[in-house]
Amino acid sequence: MKINEAIALSKDYGANTTLGALVKQIQGNKIHKCPKCSGSGKVAVKYDDYPPGLPDSGWAHKWITKYVECDLCHGEGYTEHEYKPRMVQDGWE
Image (cartoon, rainbow, N blue to C red; front, side, top):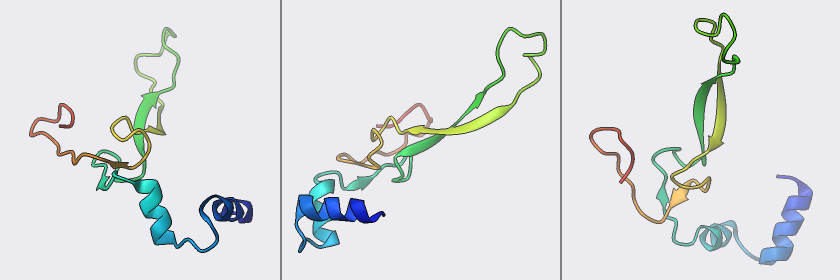
């Protein structure tokens, strides 16, 4: 955390606010850790960045991993409802 971020938090929430109170205020009802991203808010997605339509595009794969916002918790890391995986991994309930 940078100094200017700490000063902004101090101005927004008061200088005497504890970290526990700050977490409770920001978290609100979202008390369940997201099972898809494990609370980080981002999931790893692999994709092939080789352009399609080129002569060797069928076998020359260069798989890249990028991190995108979790679609289950919308990048928050926590959800209001507890989600459990189904037996067949077709999604979350």
